[in-house]
Image 1 (spheres, rainbow, N blue to C red):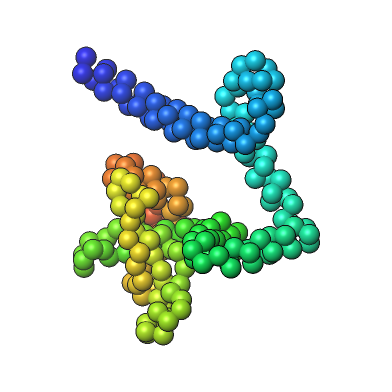
Image 2 (tube, helix red, strand yellow):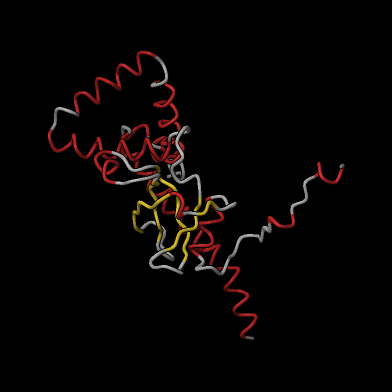
Length: 210
């Protein structure tokens, strides 16, 4: 009976957590309906609340904003808006910091969180998985001799908290593992291991032909 109970937990717990997270996201996005006039809300139009309408509205709004800012006029509007925010003392520091982080994370040309690395941490002989976030900049670069990289070392089982490190590139090992596999490995505390990939077993087709 205990085995059956544990098997049931293994099936239901991930499903319950997934549904809970989805419900949290959708209910949060549904709050965007409060920005509409009351007569335009689903409760007034259809006589009943329709879950997910706010999420759809939010996604459509984000898409339209992205579409509008791709043209010349939209870029000028964004530039004027940012110039206005840059004149407000407290807002300026918060907005510029958040914008730099978001530009780094979501930029299609950047390498932030696109590579999983193996590093020795927190001491010699102990290894952990880290994510490449870029290279040191500013005055920090003037005090580091050699080729350094910026790393984010997530904690387990909550990868949203972690440590920021700057380490020599030669002290890191790039893993043949995508970010999703690395996150699963970290969150599961090593229980859900990615598929084993032995490079020694790779056979070059050109050598076979020769």
